[in-house]
Length: 283
Length: 283
Image 1 (spheres, each protein chain N blue to C red):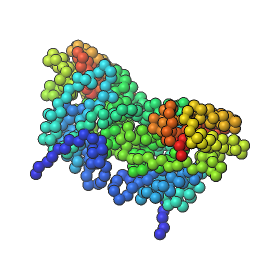
Image 2: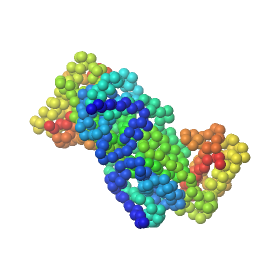
Image 3: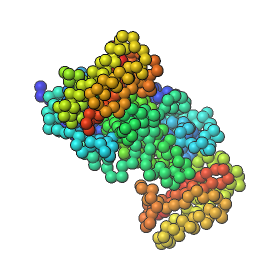
Image 4: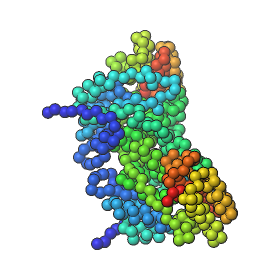
């Protein structure tokens, strides 16, 4: 039986496809910025398993990039993305233009207070305002029952869950596990920025997280001691630490006492490339 | 044939009722803060004429009141409201608590830039942020095809239309004409605040607007001259002018040259009571 993957460029067409909600057809949605890797594809597979209609958006959202960030150089390969998504029998690829998403005179923004100004929000002050706004738009356009998102963007998921709850959007985020390269590096479209040498040094991120998990397993209960050890490992690899924290997974506040679910989160620069990674401290 | 009007207190129940959209049943929604008058009822009647399911919300939204405003004294009469809505065969009255709408730790806000900081936004700086946020929540909860709103809140409608367009909400605002008392005063729940003497003086609002429309009909094309005349009439009644403007109905910017659709908008205080009124300058 043949299957077609349809590319949709307009909001009007996309929203008409899913405007009628019913019980028989669940819509699963995977928002992406394209340049897809195995991490994205794992989200698509999860959506295909649980939903009758699967939609993937490919849109590099300018409003979540700061002025000095990598909007212009962000990697893209639409042809390959379409090939990958067609092979996975995705039903629709939503691929809108900037004019379609932010027409002249655009004025409306969503902010999730507190959660957006800490961690990545400290060095990227407008980032999560842009993320919250574009995801609200995509929810309204795609009308999904479930949204599949990668746990690598841990703070992003926490902020979007909060937005969905606060604004009563009738959708649910399904977080999926981080997909890693064989050597442990968390997959990211931005990994292509790394030189061979930076790529090697960046392994300190997953290694330091693994070391932290072992410390916790060995009964270390002081978050500060674990954070210091993580920082040491990263500094030995010449990574420039933006932050290393152990936080509550819901409130994103620093943990004073650890549970299995306490989350190690970190952001580190290697050269010009800023990478993030995270894991829960327990097994 | 008997008809029941059901009162719904929870978001979960309300959203489950309209979560399934179909082509046969259009949902019409009238958001209110209660203490209903003929203006509100005209919206309900318009909804009943065009929709198979009609929902009215009664919720005094605290986030749209400034610290020194009348949140505590805002008039309410739920029993009478229910009686009126039952007589009009409304299907559901959504009547949530503050705990239901803004639970502990609420953090998400929507802002429509520029449009929210002018006119009423100047003297009520947080007002439209609260309005935009609560209406986004209500849209997500009620999932209406059409929202019926009174033209008295002209700036509010312009801001909400912009929010709906920018965030791609799949709903449409149907503005309905201002309903006036026989002597011309625009109906408002806040009119009960007026003393007998203030109530008389407040007639200068509709009178000044009528005078402005006559000036335009008599070929006056200079907005400034018309604004001066309106202001004179209001000042003669000892009204304290917050603003008097003639604006473009979409951008809300001051008109330099007038069209039939140019909008006279004004806000004036009589004693402690702030009233607004508006009309298009043409016939």
